[in-house]
Image (cartoon, rainbow, N blue to C red; front, side, top):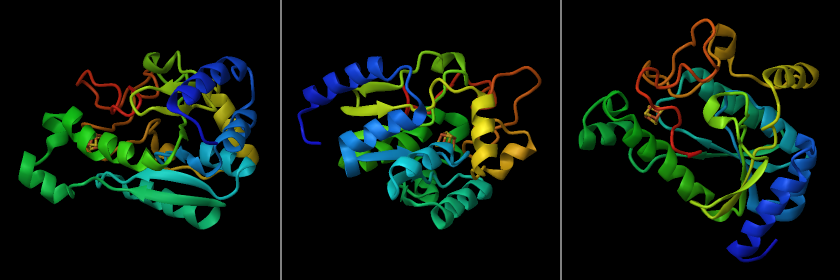
Length: 233
Ligand code: SF4
C-alpha cells in the first residue's frame, strides 16, 4: 500500500476498532493484505508464536530480531532455529556500538547503572533505524503480561515512529499461547522451561526468574522501577 502517514494514522485507528474482536490470523491477514512487504514482525525470540502466526498467512514474512550483544545463548539459538525451520526471513539488527565500544564510551555494565540509556542505544535506536523500510510492524505484546500492557490495542498508530503498530495476540492469555504452541509445535526459548517467564538480556539486573505470585514481567529490570525497554512506550 502507498499513502501518506495521515492515511496510515486513520487506517490504524479504524482497524483498531474494527479488528478488536478479530482472530490473530485475521489481524495478520489484514496487515499482510494492506502493507505487503512493507509489513514486518518483530520478535524477542522468547517464543516464535507471532512469527508462526504471521508465516501462516504470509510465508516469507520479515521477522526482525534485535541482537543487543547481551542475549542469552538460548535466545540466539532460538533465532537460528526459527531461521532454519520456518518460512520466514529473519533480519538481525545490531546497535551502532559493539558492547566493547559502549564500555569504552560509557563505562562497563551500563545496564546496571543506566538501563534506560543502555536500552536506548542497544534496542530503541536500532529498531527505529531497522523499521525505516516498513509502514507497519507487529509485536507479541499481550494485555495480560503486566499492568502497563493492559490496554494494548490490536492495531494502533505508533506516533513516535509514524508507523502502524499491530499486536495480533493482544487479547490472548497465557493459556491461549500455551494451547497454540502445543497444537502447532511452535519453537520456544529453552529458558522458559527453566522458570523464566519473560526473556530479555542476560545481565541479572535485566532478566531474572519471577518469584511466586509475581506477574510475568516482574523479573525485568527488577527493583529499578523500569518496566519497559522503551520500544513500546
Ligand atoms: S535489557 Fe539490559 S542489557 Fe539489554 S539493552 Fe536493556 S539495559 Fe542493556
